[in-house]
Image (tube, rainbow, N blue to C red; front, side, top):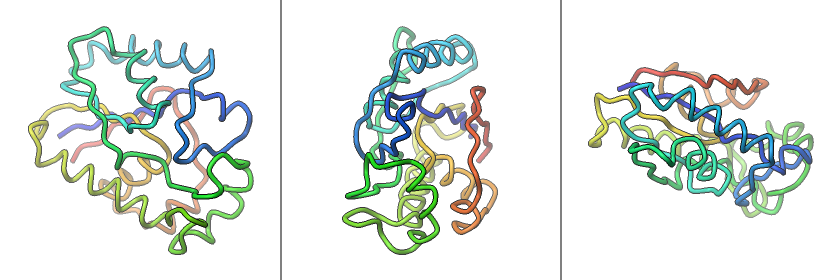
Length: 177
């Protein structure tokens, strides 16, 4: 199975420096343009289905990019970002600077990074045994989605994934399960 990972496009919260977490979020004007470019880049890429996080910013990315095609767009809550609990919507700098404290300990009223990665792994493993097995599928998600795929495909440890600095790539990532 081939998985093409695309992150949700730039959101209003990203522009403000907020860590949206489980809040829905909305794409900003440049994010909507990014989503359209992703669709142009991927529409003839052999994608059998799009599976996206159910958070608004991911759904909006999928719909703007590929909503006018015959490619089915399905939502899976397990592909969501880490739930920062009471810190959803707080400063992304604060979340980044304290992230190592929450590898196993949940954010206040939220979840730990280990739990969010396990949730994504469950979703990815489910795809591998679904009707999409053996096909090329696009996943649209968040940093937790990326970490889950890196954990499944490359065996990266949760500690290493959380410690690593993340760099967004407009061209996305490609994985083979």
